[in-house]
Image 1 (tube, helix red, strand yellow):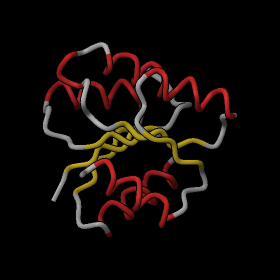
Image 2 (cartoon, helix red, strand yellow; image 1 turned 30 degrees about the horizontal axis):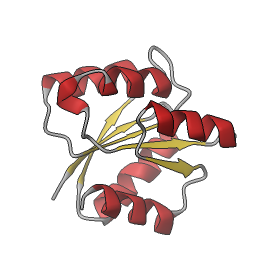
Image 3 (spheres, rainbow, N blue to C red; image 1 turned 90 degrees about the horizontal axis):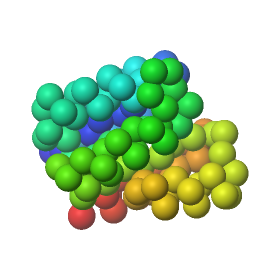
Image 4 (cartoon, helix red, strand yellow; image 1 turned 135 degrees about the vertical axis):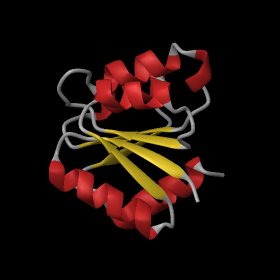
Length: 121
């Protein structure tokens, strides 16, 4: 059983991602924005995967990925970007920043499950 942090400001996406994580037998923790997620990670560095949206208040997904990848304790943590508002070049830039995978919204359960399984191998 793994702990998965979900940084997402949209309530529907929060609930859906949390349900998918639970259905895989893992424990979801939801943060309402990137700054909260970063503080949760710094306070309790025992999450196995971070799933984050891009467009969020206080600290967006790009800033969160950059901040985490600049911190040696989070260099190997799998980071999954989940977003509806990006193009191909944006996805490429996010992966170059250090994101591990990209999932388009609306979230496809089979694709979500596969990405999480890959992150936890």
